[in-house]
Image (spheres, rainbow, N blue to C red):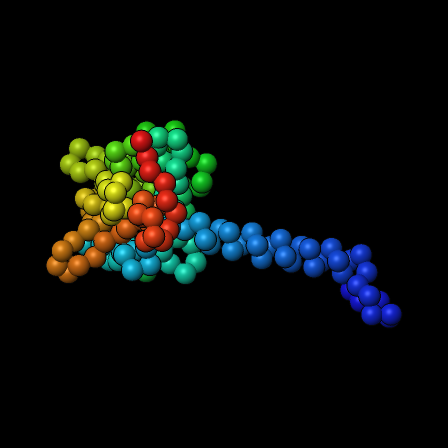
Length: 180
């Protein structure tokens, strides 16, 4: 707030500092997403396209020592938001009672995502396991949701893929880290 003499009082100063903090915090969260904007779609035969890097939300592959985990939300126009983890990974879930998707040092995903409109989605089951190539960042294979069927992460024709920039080579862009 400005006083009559034109100076900013304590309340105005506090509001300015708060506004700067909120702006910086919000941009840090948005910058944390690391799904490639050009390679962000997965396909589910019964639910349509999933966008892993929507304008609001988005997914991040996060490092945790030799392993990692996924955090954030993917968006599917036909079924809504799918939660892959709340950012406190690695997740202790090994059954469809708590969501969170983990990644081992080889890029194998395990655990469950949750969508309010689709229920549980398994990233590792008896028939398929979603993987992330730890060199290219490209996701592959199928996840399974009882209510939406198979979710496919990579296809040649028509071409689509989900890819994280977390494994980008130096000079390519993205966050560079390597699981060992």
